[in-house]
Length: 81
Image (tube, rainbow, N blue to C red; front, side, top):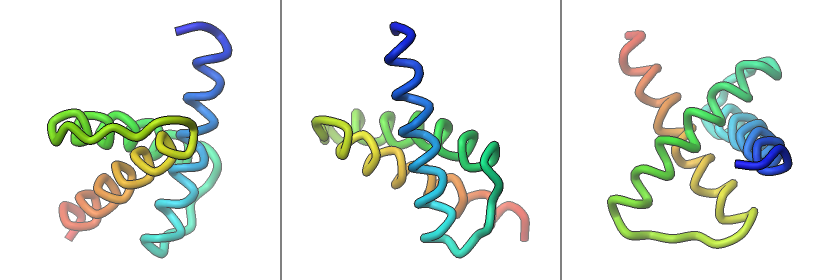
């Protein structure tokens, strides 16, 4: 991954973490959004790959990452209870 690829991955993770936090009704800081979004990107990418679903482009990456981040936040909520 090139330097620019890493930056784009982090920006996508940040946006995905922010969107997932809003969808799940959570208020998170910048670093938490980034961590949730990056882990969500890994989860979403894995699930999309297993289901053979492919999204193209930046918007597709944000969608997959956000869905993965929502799944992560949901699992954390379940485990916390």
